[in-house]
Image 1 (cartoon, rainbow, N blue to C red):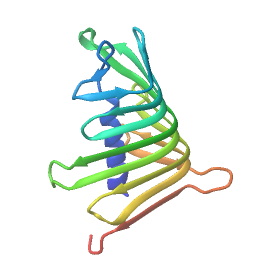
Image 2 (image 1 turned 30 degrees about the vertical axis):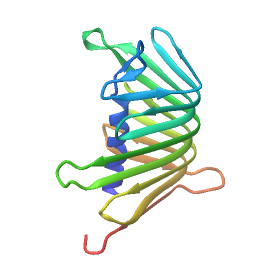
Image 3 (image 1 turned 60 degrees about the vertical axis):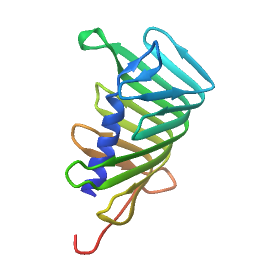
Image 4 (image 1 turned 90 degrees about the vertical axis):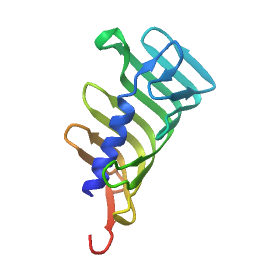
Amino acid sequence: MKYTVAYFAALFFALSTLTVYADSLSVAGGAKLTASTLELNENTVIAKGNASLSTREASIKANTIRLNLEKGKGGKLGLSKALATGRVVINASQVDAATKARRTVDATAENASMAQDADTVLLTGKVFVKVSDPQFAEPATIAGERVVVYLKERKIQVEGGSNKSAEINVTPREGE
């Protein structure tokens, strides 16, 4: 489970540090934001209807994606908060620099939010996360009504709903 939590946190940390430039709707590192309708003003970008934010390593799809921007060091606009609502789907992959092992994360939820200042990612509503890693005999799964990822602490909290318990399933490969 150590690798599941660490990678899940690393995934969202990577997404949270993207720099959004409102004038071109692009993100540093080659990201792309698309939707049926895109609205932007000085500090907010809203993608409505089949919204998608994607980079080389990850994508987030939802009914709506809202990015709140604020000026950071050097006066550049940076991402302060992000909110994805309605049928959220997150897919990401990462290659470990040291071991060259590829890990993938696939997650679904009704809502996902990230607050840069709080260093947290929150998934709510029928959350299901699948993590594939060479160290696992089969993909690890996380299910619950609410999942909170604490990025600085590298900790994850899974909460069940009124009718279902929180669940984490991890099966390491034999001999590891």
